[in-house]
Length: 347
Ligand code: G6D
Image (tube, rainbow, N blue to C red):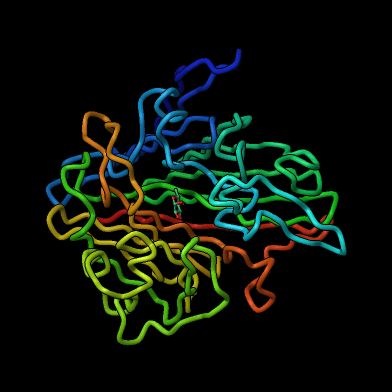
C-alpha cells in the first residue's frame, strides 16, 4: 500500500490537500479534504487496464463552479427536506432553501464544502483516511454540536469502505452519504446508459414534481424500477412512466433495500468487464442517473452531458422528518450515529 499526499489548492487562506491511496493491485483512490471529495478511483478492466471510474475535477475552481456534488460527502442531511424546515420537540428549524424552495444536501455550505481535518492510519494490508469535523449548533440551521468522523479504508482486495460516525450534544437529524458519480467504462469513454444495475429492492418512493417524496411507497413489479433481475439504465430514460419523466427522463429515486451487507447493489459494464458491488447497513439507496448534468463544462477533457455518470447514494430516506412511516433520521442527544458502505470493484 502507498500513500501520496500533495497540495491540491489554496482556498480562503487554507490549503486543500490531495490524498491518493494506492493498493498492491494498482487501484487508486484520490480524495481531497474539501468535502472529503473523492476525485478519482482507478480500477482495472477485464484486460487489467487501469482507468478512472468516477466524475471529478483537477481544480478547486471547477468544483466551486460546476460540481453537482461530484464525489463529495453530503450532509448533515442528504436528499431533500420539504419546505426547508422540520420540527423537533415543538421547535421548528428553518434550513436553507437551496432547491426550489426546499432544502437539498445539507444546504449552502454543507459537509461537501468544508475542509475536514485528516489523519492517515496505515495497516499492513489497508490504508485509512480519517476525516473529522465539528458541525456547530445552528450550522445551516441544524440543532446541536455534531462531531463527525468519516473513514475511507482501501484494502488489497480492491474494496473501499466508507464509515460515518457522529454524536451530538442535542437532539438533531443526520443522514450522510457519499455522492460519487460512477462510470465503469473507464476515463468516461461512454455514458452509463448501457450499465446494468441489479438491486435487491421491491419498493421505491414516489416523487412529486419537485422530487420530494409524496409518502407513497410503490412496488417495483412490472415497472422500469424493477432491478431485481438486472436492468440497463437506458430502460428508464426513454419510458413514458411518469416517475421517470418527472425525474428528468431517468431515475432520481430512493429504493428501499431488502437486504444489507449481502451484495444488495451490483453495477456492471459489459463492454469493460468492470463491476461494482455495494454493501451497506443503510435502509435505502438513491439511484440518480445524472439526468440534470449540465453540458456547459468539461470533465478532464470530456464534455459533460446527461447520463455521463450515476450515483448510488446509500442512506436513510429523504424527507423522513415529514413522513413518520419512513425510517427516522433523528439522532438523540449523545446517541451514536453509524453508517457504513463498502464498494467492491471487480473485473
Ligand atoms: C439533482 O435531484 C438530483 C439530486 O438527487 C442530486 O443529488 C443532485 O442533482 C446533484 O438535484
